[in-house]
Length: 426
Image 1: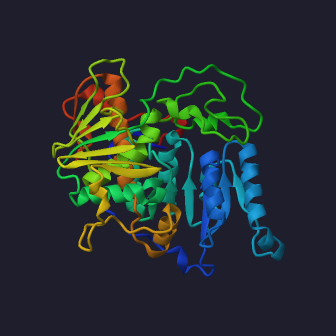
Image 2: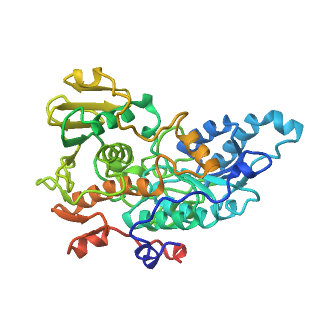
């Protein structure tokens, strides 16, 4: 479904656009929502949306039968009163996301598949005119991200990347960004990001495929290999599977949480529609921390390397102090930086109340851009991809954030794209 020509032909940059027909125009005034991928993350999203009066869950899709059945039971239980009254006819189950996209009256989809499936499902959903909420990291490689952005902008659907730190977690990250924007730490010099290491090649042994699991569909565009329950757990699992560790499907810890924390860093730099100009891996090829991203304005962002005990999800260092922020809180050195509130004339971040889901559904109804559009989600994921490439190649790389290419480096540029398996090519 995603050929090399499709990727490389995507526009180098695309403007934010407004939505097509609003779901609020429907008589029911509810957004008819379908779910693609109902593992532990998708199940969490499902539980949240089942309590949202702005939404009606009408369709479900997964490649593991037990998960699909369980999700259907969740929907039936939540809508039990409406089922009895005849106001709700049940959520239709699908094993092929393309058939879900043809579901009558469907307005929008939530995509919570493994990362290697995000691009194909997003592009097909956009072409079908469905509004999209897609989990982060947005893609498995850079070219996929640009293709997603091009498809979303062409279709004019409303898109939300699942970068919940922009709206949730006590507002700590929002506050950090505003204080950086308003000069409370002086001139920003260095950002340190605390996340895991890069992805590694998958070397897991082959196991017998469980009954009810469509393993070939789970692989999708990824290289063909045997089943292993570490990648696709049996039945309804309660943990986050380790497919995240392997480069065939994702970007390791560097991308899994990095898509969140690098997103906040780029937001604070006002570079969340651009990127760095140089990637410098550590000198020791065995080291999996310390890679540096250098920006045109001189700011250096460092992966998982801290000074002393000053470790946090995001550490912003300026000429007049530091801000350390994480999901559990925010502090500054010196403490006086955060003590005085910002004034009425201070520059503020995108206003968002009610959480990431509500921001998306509000924008679906209004047609306004979300707090984390496809372009922003792509740029944040690109930071993760660049880091993985830097660790794999173990040499300095010059990056052009406008062209989204490495300068005079054919080998590095080959790392920006992956041909999908033939059955998923167009």
